[in-house]
Each structure stands twice: as C-alpha cells, then as structure tokens.
Length: 382
Image 1 (cartoon, rainbow, N blue to C red):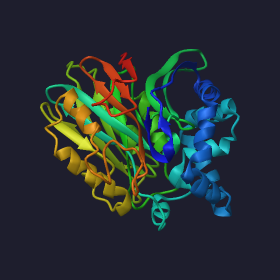
Image 2 (cartoon, one colour):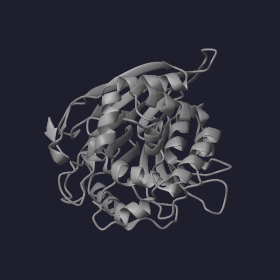
Image 3 (cartoon, rainbow, N blue to C red):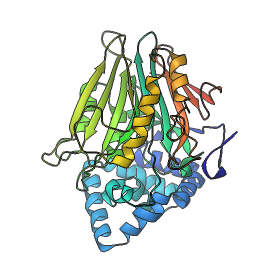
C-alpha cells in the first residue's frame, strides 16, 4: 500500500460492478452501489467546492446551468437519465452530479488556472503500440480526492423492450458518467482519453463528458469521428482519444489518435485523426500535438516534461517497455506515474491500464506497473 498526496493510501483494489438495465436503472445502480465513494469525492474536490458550487449560486451560473441542462436533455436525454438515476441511487441532489459532469459550462479552465495559488497538474499519459506487440497503455491521473474513488462499470444498456442497445466496460470516476477514462465495448473498440486544455472553451456547446459517454456505443472510426464532431453543436472543451478497433473486416486491428477542439465559428467540433501505421508507436499526454490552437500554459507544462521523459525510453513497441514508461518517475517535478506529493504537481495516478490487445487482456494496476502485479486482469470480451 503506497502513500500519495495528503497521506491518502492507495488501496490495491478496483471494485467491479456488472449491471443490466435502461439508462436510469444503470445510473441508479451505480449510485446505490458507490454512494460512499461519490459522497467522498464531492466532499473533497477543491474544484467542485471552490469553483463549480460558488459559480452555480450566482444568477449567471444558474442561467448557464439551466441553459445547458436544456441542451443536454435535448441532445443526450439518455445520459441525463443516467445522472438522474445515479443521483437518486446515491441520495445526492441531481444538480450536484450534473455540475460535476459539466465542468466548463460554469467555470472555464482559463478562470481556474489564472488564479495565483492554483496548483499545477493535469492528467493522463497514453501510449499506442502497433509494433512488435499491440498495446494501449494509459495512466489515469486525477485529483487526490479520486484516490480509491474509481471503479469499473461493466454495463449492458437495454431499451424498454429489454433489447440490448449498448454493452461496455469502463473505468469510472465516482459521480461521473462512464466513458471519460479508459475501457472497451462489445464491438472491439478500446480507448483511453487525455484531457486537453484549449484556452477558449465554449459554454454553449456539448460537454466533453457527454461526448465521451456517447463514444461507448461506437464500433467504427467513422462513427467515432461523427460523434466527436457533434454536428449541430460541437464540443465545449477538448480531449484526445486513443483508439484501437480490434475487430475489423480484414482482421487486422487499427490504431488511431484523435484530437478534438471547440470550434467557435461553426456548428461542429474540429477533429484531427492520425493513424498509427504498422510498426509505429505514438504517445499523447495533455497538450495538442496536431490541432493548432492556443492552450493554457500552466496546463500544458506537465505534458512537455512527460513527453521528454517518454522520449528517453526505447521505442514503446512491447508490453514491457510500455509498463516501464508508465512507471517513470525520473522527472522530479512532473513524473509520468504521479503521487501528487510534491508541488507544483498535486495530481495522482489513480490507476494504470495496459491493454494487451493480441491476448485480449486488460491489466489494471494501482501502483507502478514495473514494480507490481495487476490488481485486476479483465478479459477483453468482444
């Protein structure tokens, strides 16, 4: 058991919930099962307590909240139902969980990061290998309030007739919609997400957590790109998607990195797709590598350091090298595997996932993967 920020110990555990039902029922079951974790997250999150809630209490904040609740109920009614179910199951007011899933709709990252006392740090480093071994590796980095407050949801979503409409397995933050982390679905779509920080975010567009949730139903690159473009509205904020389509007509898995950015001049997101060719590898952290946009300087600083650390390793074309990279703590200020124990970086690696695609295994670690055994090994059942 390893200590991290605020002396909170990482537990060698990842709860797994298997659930079947409609969107509300799945949300309700998650809320009921993980009520204590959701409460713990809300009670300790500085961003929620010091930014989201105070802004929500203002006249402007309530107007933005209602406007974007209307938007999400119109565009993503099934995911609003999931949050309503989660709130009811956890006996927590709906508005709190909806706020948690909105982020920039109330307080923009630029406002938060401009504060003089803000502690630097942002999360997630990902490696894609189409080399000697097929691998997607990912560190799930988050605020210290989420240490031990993540879990796996393996869900089968059914319609009113009981027919299956979605089936996915994903790491999930307490109180948040599934999808904005790492996981896979029944179509062989394996993914991880890196948060990106464009300077300009748009509070009249679709929240990225809702876009990411929608990706859990995708089976092809074309479907993923369509969902990320979000024609008619476009995304409010940015992220990078690392994607493997393990089931293809040719039988050859396809790997991609896809960046998405808000577009103020149109009704759909800006999306950039890069294919990782056979023999190639790719690393992505929390800054744009291809889309040209102004980013928050504080937010991208850690990524610059992590990319430099990655470049010092051998080509990440095997499972063992990927594990070594995701365990790297050589940078004294901005390590890849993060304990959040030294300013300015207070973010913590709450889990590491290594997808062994050829052998269809998802290895999940809570400590450095080059020094520990996975706490869970889940089959990639598709």
